[in-house]
Length: 192
Length: 192
Image (cartoon, rainbow over all chains, first blue to last red; front, side):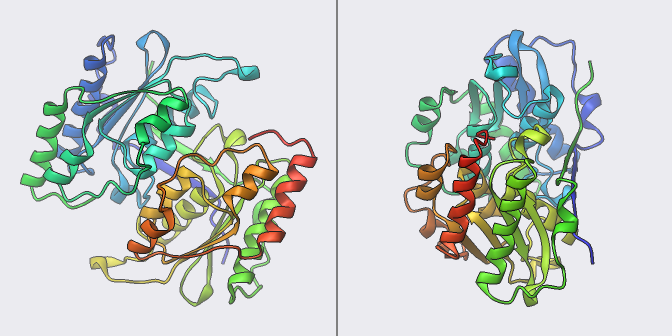
């Protein structure tokens, strides 16, 4: 027996071609609609749960995207937000997106998540070096419309992010995000 | 520009040879001492923060190990616990370690962490499919002995794990774990 040494996680094969890189992502709604588009396409392609995310850098540049790929990748960290954040960090070659060489600020970075991050993605968001978190559907929408569990969070989860310099904007295109959650359940989607 | 599609994270090169696979990991202390050994060697090799972790399957079989590799891998999820859990899942080819085909229980799986998991690894622990969490140093030790921030947790973080079927055992070789934390700071270790 030898110990495993390498983690490997890939996005679904359909994904790169599904993103129109010429689109503008200037507004919060533009950014969120990409995350929601990805959540819908992940459901349509049957590649995972109804969750999408995207990371944007300074000048609203799209840096990376993610979708839920837990079952396909046999990896419980392969949630949309964690995928997008990690891909962004590896593309930018730094573990805290908004801190460059010599700890120099180099943001702002924004994470758009089609649903409120679960307990795991919440923790990942704390360390990833983002300045803004945009949330589509709320945790109560996820609970009401799907069988997914979002897990335990600090009571004042938004305040904890604010105190760490992360602005939180909720209910961005909330209804559009909820439509995808509902469609996943209507299709009899598995929990993951 | 094209979007990044693949996440790649590797353990430090010294690590596989540093684990004696013939050792017995029968007791909680045996398991924890491996996690603490790895935390110490990560400090000595200057490959990351003073944190180690290991995952054990049924019959106390060692499945995977991890150390903090955040800076070397430019990846903020590359904490010891998340590395060990993800490597274990990919080795076992399932995203929930203690659930096999048809959701059949196939544990117990144990995670030994040289220090209490931070907010991110806490969330990862909720979903990873482990039955037992062994903790060496407490969060208050990490705060007192290093400059690492463990992040915001639910007030009743242990109760939340218990309610999800995860037994938590604290203070396993706590003093030995604290020695490594102290040595990292004495060496002037960077925060990551």
